[in-house]
Image (cartoon, rainbow, N blue to C red; front, top):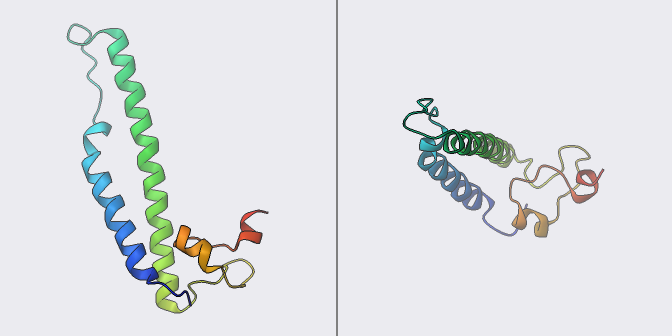
Length: 109
């Protein structure tokens, strides 16, 4: 078991991500297609911004899923052990990324 409060770290990271995602909801709204109100280049910029926002949201959802999985491992007593080889994950790695499911050896292969 790690020598730091992994649960608090994971919960804090989860709350931060959820807060960011709620604040970014405006970015994923449909882009106005009325060319008389918005120029073609402005619309293209808006579409590109929307695509970027969607990708960012997808990544944040993946990170939330990783955090949820880490919290489940913490609850079951498997936290801190590699899900692939069952070796202990270094505390240094877990402090850097508390949701890390793999040890450094398995992550690099």
